[in-house]
Length: 251
Ligand code: SF4
Ligand code: SF4
Image (tube, rainbow, N blue to C red; front, top):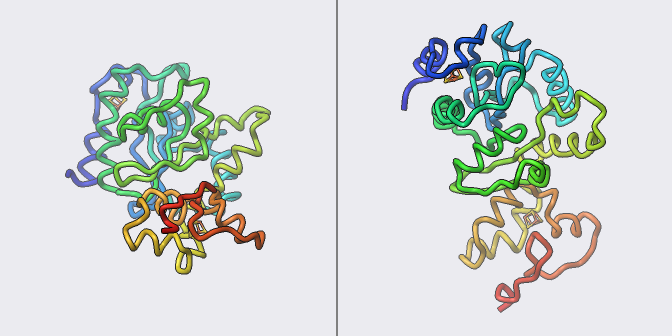
């Protein structure tokens, strides 16, 4: 694995694809090198290209607002792009550009080793899903994965809409804000974990780890058991976090 300094030096002078001809600045990732959350955007915009800094234009302002609502300090996270140079006229990235430039992102993931990867928008999500052998829906259906937690190959992935989606009146505004607030949920384990039967079943080898990673140490807010517990509703010990019942746990 190369060092962070060496990686950034290589990115700074990269001319491995046509985008180096139209960029003003190439953007290396920014932020906390010990971050638990790694945000992965598509590519720098015009403001970022001009100033050489991530998320400083209108989308950056939206991101700052979303982070405040999620109670996440920008200093705690690491942010980077799938493509490190601006795409002319905000066109879509070409497959060969993704293939060449994603090598840098892969190095960043190895170096930072965050608890959760957070791809923003379709192209970043598509790349991360393919990298970790998950299948992403078509572009028009990709909104179905935003705000949902995935766990694969030891990685947690939370795809989110790109902040630019909120630049214009978006009917999904509330949903997008709710999805960003999930970041904070994922940083803490469920408060019921020490006494939850799911923990016992897992430690006894009766329960697949995915339930623990996706809910108890992941999106516990979506756990049906958690919601029922909060509402004081009774539920059987062998009810799984998604509300289904596994009678084998009962035996
Ligand atoms: S987009 Fe990536 S591969 Fe292409 S020139 Fe910029 S840094 Fe290099
Ligand atoms: S199963 Fe649900 S309630 Fe129990 S620890 Fe996990 S998330 Fe919390």
